[in-house]
Length: 155
Image 1 (spheres, rainbow, N blue to C red):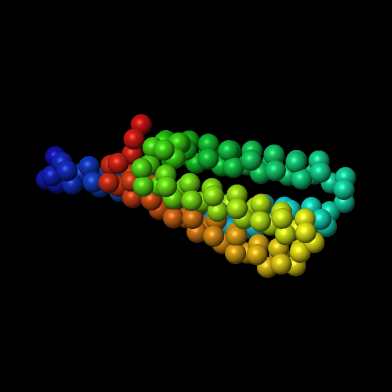
Image 2: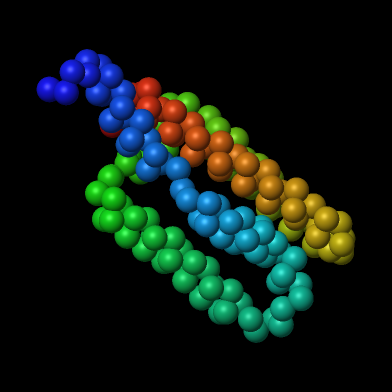
């Protein structure tokens, strides 16, 4: 043994494991850009040609596949397999639910504004919605990290 008490070793291991719950800054930058693009889909659809539906579907499919591949490669490279379900993280679960509610309200609100011909107001509301969802997602990941550090992750 190296002279460090066992509980301190466990706490150090949890802190080291918790670093894998946070994404790098490049991920957050790309996430912000993609979030604005996805949240603005109701707005962008009004400017695109009517036949561009398959292109949007294809782009969303590529985005989803890229996200899944990123998670898989990251998990394989680090060897760390965190719980995938948000319900495993008790303090992150309520924050995540608030984030889902904000995202849905924002998306439906933007769609309602675009449908009523208020595209300019929707463009002004878009950064607010995207920033709110971004901050909630960041807060969720931080809560997941705290849960891992404190050993509160459920299986």
